[in-house]
Image 1 (tube, rainbow, N blue to C red):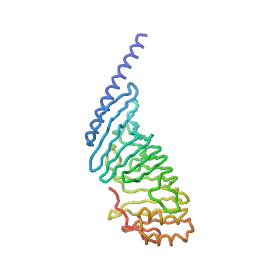
Image 2 (cartoon, rainbow, N blue to C red):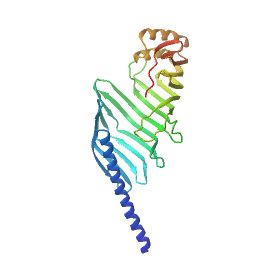
Image 3 (cartoon, rainbow, N blue to C red):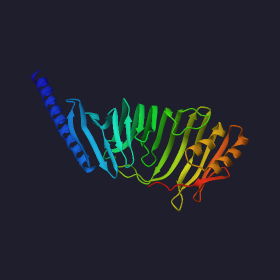
Image 4 (cartoon, one colour):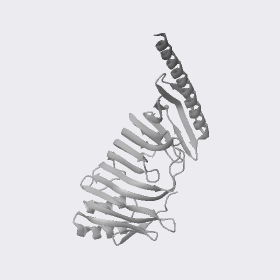
Length: 307
């Protein structure tokens, strides 16, 4: 009996020592990370004995004409699984840009980061989930979404992670005649080709190609689904083909024009070309030679491949 009691006491002492050691390491790492990024905030750790709950009170960041502030930011991890982190954001966050201030608000905005404990804690999976997410600008514009999700999954494929996102019931970025102000769905599912795997959270990412498996928009009686593959050409511009299926195709020229992606003359030309589809059809967006075409119609200049 004494031996069993002694083992229990020894295990409790060792576990408690492990928690205090881990809490100290977590606090030191958080402070170092804030310092490296030029950010400020008061760091505290609680959760004894089974969790590490790290709270940064009044985090603030200001660099390269971008500033950020919030009442708090929290990261949670179970003591027996410190490679799986859950982050909780404050209901209201403020982002200051050079020309405007944007307020981000959500009563439920969480992120989950799963790392590989056997691979220098390289990221394996990142997920973000938010409800009633709202962006409001000092310029007067605002975007609201009922639900926002995004994910990067590199499990088993560090050079080809799967990426995706989904927004439901969100404010249209521009008004379009004949369409409602609310977009029911926008989603994206793709695979990235990386030049090297993600080795740590702060790594730079170099993408050599993007394969779009499924992208879609449901906006009133306008519907769009797309798939294709994009990669940089020899000049460093985006190249490739995207196949698109349309419902309510007659709305497309107005949407592209309202977004400023095509001129008024191109809007009229594209509308005439799509009229033969009678509201539905298949089109291909081609990017090659620095030019963008919708079917046979040139509509713009291909953007540079992001680095």
